Length: 298
Image (tube, rainbow, N blue to C red):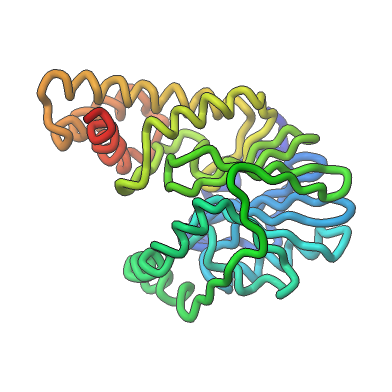
């Protein structure tokens, strides 16, 4: 792992503690020749070409979106600006109104359908979680995308190509992934993270789908990974994520065959995985993964 990524990983916790629901200003780190990251909540990726710039995710609400716009404009080599979002959750998609009107917003059809169906519900849900969220999400205005795609679209940014693609449901139904081909950098949304338990909050998530997507991502042989949350890392994060989720799926299925209820299995496996994976610190979502495994086995 490069010294650059080690420094980014060390700064991630500090950035989140200083601004737990936000994107810090003047904190851009260069990941590769064309890719930059702002480590915050969430992490933001910026891909810079000679003809255009691509921003991945918006932060929560227009205040965070404005920070990202300012940082992207500092890096841009040309005025053309693309914006895409890895999924519809508020910390990833509700800062779009801060972007200039000429920004070209791109999403997969599945994600936009989810935004239309559940976007307002999730803004209300996140607003109810804290006073800070409520303030950040006040008066949010969403706009329709300029471009939608079914499976894949490629953006020639000038000297660098960003491949935007959708492979099915995992964390949400509309998870989008981005691969920066020349730099071999994967921007996987919530689907590949650094020792964070996969989050499957409701019936739209899929453990089976998540594993199938990870199988496909392994074939990219990514050199570097910029997750949506947590520390940045190298391409080994894909295999690490898959190994953890496959282990959890296998143990949950074994307990189900023994007649253990989903709730009890969640409690048992949380204790078991605390010991087995002591450096995976956020085991709260584990019980929900177990519930999804049980539901998908029926």
